[in-house]
Length: 389
Image (cartoon, rainbow, N blue to C red; front, side, top):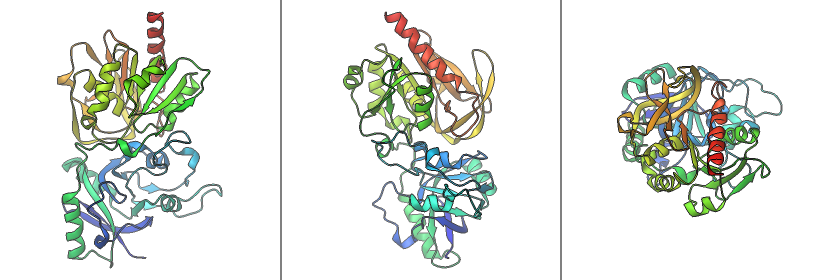
């Protein structure tokens, strides 16, 4: 089998072993394709497990994920673990990220009802590369920032000057994550009703929602209606929601001004909630700004402090953008803060029924410390219900 090569936009590269779906040869690269497998922003994830949930998380669309934990594939893959949302109406099921990078690929047996990681990536046409010095690459990204990268299949054991030239030219022309709207590639294309006898009624605006967000809300008895993020304010309000939740998703929140304007119109008419990308869009709707982080937060071990109680808990995170605290209006207060770098991890409004969290309270994968956030969301919605009655 031929070798594969991981190439960063700054020219850094390393040869490794290919697995999963074959990456393209350098001569096969099509500069006309804006979003395709094998090329994307390279980010590192510090989780020790949960690679299946990470691979199927819509928020990783347009990114190549590198695990800092040295082993991958140890327990196989099972479709039941996927984070692609409910059956039906999903634009692009399966693996969301553009590629997967490991130090060591487990190639031993897995339970009979599961696929190996290699087979799973082949099925979903996603290339992987192993035998990569992930510690070196993580430190490189930490020092120089996340940037676009590509996985290519090599003609020989090592890349030729022409292969490196072609790959470099392709990366130079490839759009950066900043300013990129990737929501058209994820999410539902039709409304999906879940637990119609439940209460309260939450409309989930889907920009790439994770399945476990839906599960957590359903377990708390809520009536849920999942809708495309292309729906108008009038369509959303016609469902008579008690609250509207804006989901996680990929890309730059600053590129999603149409959705931000919808949130602005909904504020004051219903309770508004948000997770990750939804949190960032709500912040913009309230007048704040967002910016690109140097290398973001990707992992299941990020400490967050509740600024109201001063309690610290561990969270699952996946974001490359954050809210600029200096731009927050006076009526918005910081609910959560990252205990490592001090960045904003959640907001609440002083008088309106608005709550949002930057981290993922559904914890898939990750610790369960923050699942109580869903109770806080529903409590806020019920308070609003009582205030209206």
